[in-house]
Image (cartoon, rainbow, N blue to C red; front, side, top):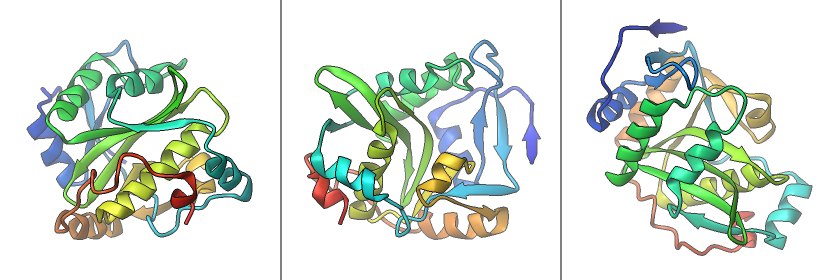
Length: 212
């Protein structure tokens, strides 16, 4: 894995330029303010036509035990993702993704239980590519439900690529795969040439629609 540890000053424009080239920033920990760029030899992606919903998850989604919202508490989703023993989300990362959100390039899909945010996923959009950053869950299956609604929204909006950065067992169970850097860059190039709209899908979507 290529790793450039030179200090960088992040701006929304720099982040978007980096994503367009297939690289992304991270930090070692929340206490470390320094950032570095990553360009993994193998990249995690979730094929938008290959998202796997298990029978039990499908039943839960159709039952609609939670309320699903979009872009109503972006900061809360990042905070939820960072609320763990170890995280790469430090203050500079938090700040730059808030800037991207206010610029219309970052979005969140949120899972609410009444007035409590119990799960969600956030990421960055650039043309037909969605770069998933992180997700969290405070209720059983909440992050899976958020991801299912995200995939539905991306498909409705004409997106071509859902980049998960790395492949985890959790993502693999949902249909995620790992592809070589060259294959990823071809997929990224195709996605960047596509027009897409994150808000093409209505804000209110039934669980049954998500599962079809």
